[in-house]
Image (cartoon, rainbow, N blue to C red; front, side, top):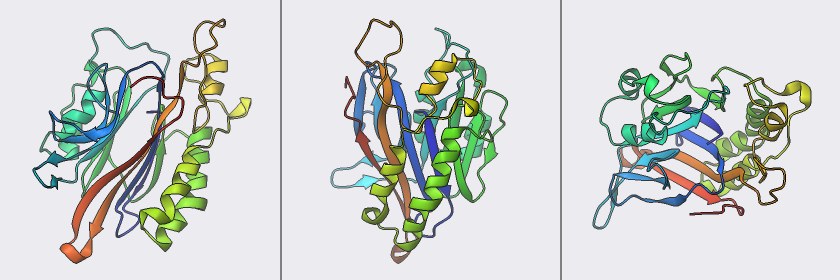
Length: 272
């Protein structure tokens, strides 16, 4: 997953609104959003390593779903350092949190950071959200507000993060404030997530990859592109999944909080 926006504690009925695009190689086998049969998780699934990039805790009962409000998302950290063969899957970070019972902060503090390739991890429940990475960013609670991050440090301002932030403030957050029902604002949110405008050359970050690749990766939504051999015509990489994760507080039921994910697969998703 390459970009995440989090509206945290901005709306009474929706204490969490999380938008995300997952950018990935198109041939990496992936299962769509579903209830996992072997773990209390509702998420898409990376069939290659068994983890996920975004999910919520959910148990399947005979006639109901049971939730505890836990949610998590992970992004890779782009600094030109290749992942080692002995490093654990970053998707495991999400599944470990969703199946644990400790607080978001306690979970972030007990991670063995050196076991993984570079990552940004956001873990939360209905009361607290925490961000941590293994590139020098200590576990930090999110304050109430709009947070947008990609594959650099959380406080870095990349073209794509600032463009997404601006469009959310102008086009989506006002709709949620007006009416928090999903049908009123989610299509606008998906439209914003589909922004394929690339950064001008002078606005590209320096992350250790080639400038031409940096250019391709500079948009909120990455159109299918061929990485590798110049003779290859079949796209190999792009935005594969777009998701909206929310926590909904029902004041009619003693402020009960329920989690939900709406996800859509991009048309060039090549392999399940």
